[in-house]
Length: 416
Image (cartoon, rainbow, N blue to C red; front, top):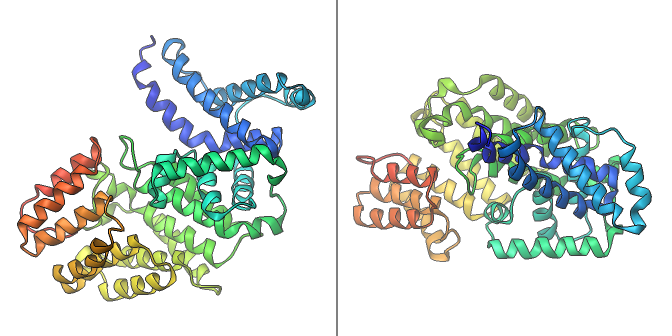
């Protein structure tokens, strides 16, 4: 084995997360839209090949090019075994080999819009797009959508089967009208990719910088593209910029430094200014969306010199609007945190009570951890211990669990 064999799995995982959409998009552009399933399969095969061979043969000089070349070769092998695809295989074979890095933004944007515009139910389209564009697993998608993993897996299987049976459903969306029509679903997908990067559902990394960078890049591409430019894409680009600006400070404490504990001097001021620029552009008209309101909340935090100096009246008011525009258990949870800062732990706990009664976030460790912090602040130590125990039961071994244990064991009341 080569000396760096131990690091190969991590290297391959990071490379695959970063390059998955690019490889798939480039292959789809060359194979044709009816070969989306094949492009995904051979990209997965290339990943497995890297895991099998690199520990023994060494990591290639250009890992991304190797991954694309391996996927391309597997596609050729598969196509050569299909008599009806001989002409297509010959066409691909004559194209230059190499990395999938060229013309990436346009190809990935086209792939994103193509998935988003599929004539399938929205509940199927969004998981499929997350799988194809971001390379997320069924488990990661389930966490992002607050669904059971088995439900997401079934939806992905049904969607891919439908596309195999009716390949005419897949039309590469290159024209401006199609890109514009696909925008709402495309925004949802980019938003969820960013969220998965900011709070991964699994793995050893508490932050997935590759997903964050890709989502921010896609948000800015949607905001700048003539066919999709508008208020909502600018707002999403603002939100991703504000949140990404916190990463240098959040990376401390093993990647789990909470907003109240972050050293704001380490926030990236360049990204914050970009966020304000995008937010100003988003206010130029159009329908008020959750992206506008979440970007407004992030901007208020970015403007505050310290956690205690935050304008909680404005934060709570923005969450009230957000609940009207896009009601969700996660918004209710975040609003409860803001209420606790403005009006005290009792107010936060009262806001959490409907969630507890409905059980909407019963399997979310972060809900139970938030409730535990508020109970501790309110002096209800025994219920707080029970809530901490439930949060830990729902968290796998790894950095997230270690963080929750540290939070549980912090002395005295702490801000959530």
